[in-house]
Amino acid sequence: MTEKALSIDYEAIRPSLDIRILTLHSGSDNDPITCSLRRATRGAYKYKALSYEWGEESDDDPSIVIQDRSVRVRQNLIYALRNIRLPSEDVDLWVDAICINQADVAGKSNQVAMMGETFSNATYVIVWLGTAHSDSDIAMDWLSDPSTIQDRISSHTRDSLEFQALVSFCNRPYWLRIWIIQELFLSRSYIVYCGSKSIPDEIFDKSFLLLAATNSQGINLSAADYHISTHRMNKDVPSINCMRIWIALCSKLGFQCLREHDRIYGLLGISHDYKLGEQNIDVDYSKSPRELFIEVIQKRFLSWYGDKRICERLAITMNVELDDELRSLITS
Image 1: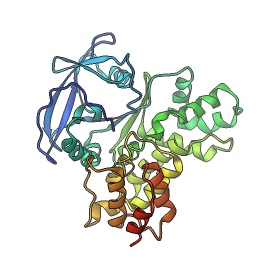
Image 2: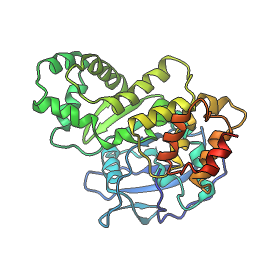
Image 3: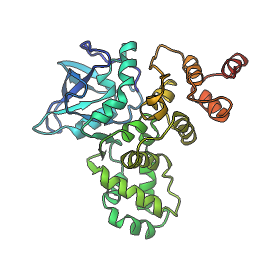
């Protein structure tokens, strides 16, 4: 999730009932990006949800036009919108940085709590990996043809351009975002975009499955394949995952987020025990990371005695110091 508020005049929305939808107006490649933003009752409108990396802030960040007002956004979002935009038809989107008022802490907390449903209700999820690099088109071409990917892997050496293209593709920063676990896990379907190329999920899933099965040469698939696997798992079997498993996996694989709170909030939509439990965690960004950590322990999503190592890892990633007072509290 992003942190810095955008200069948008937000219309108030009803907590837990409404979302905002960004309409990306049609245009040609070089036209300015113009959009409108409206309130919508959740579940009542069709839209695509954007899954992307927000990126680092820069003094050169460009602007788009929303409701006739110039709004600065990150460069990666500009690239995504330009590739999504159609020449003669508007596109309805849900984009977290724009559709959530980052300056409204209570409103943001409510919208984040709804994010799992927001992504599961989307017609499909647009996975934006970023702009094309020198070798990304090679990787996209390979992944778009599952019937040949195993032969291609076996016929290329580890230091070949084609092999390294796949390595670079799997190491893109996008794959380490903690939020994309639920964004892909809960999606009905998704389309992967990298530059001007795109691949539908059924092809992408199959290619990664075959790539993992053929991976004797050591491509580090860990984060990328993990996300694709969770999407396949959600399609094939009911969710049986609990928060402690997600926390442990995210710690092991090194997933990243901007705020310590999102180590927990980014997993709520896919945690079976959270969705069924009587003691739910309320998303509240006004809490300190320490307060949230204590809540996770006290509500038994983690047992200090049974999950000591997980608790310690979570404390480290949330920048919570396990001092004597805290240890005494959570083991009582």
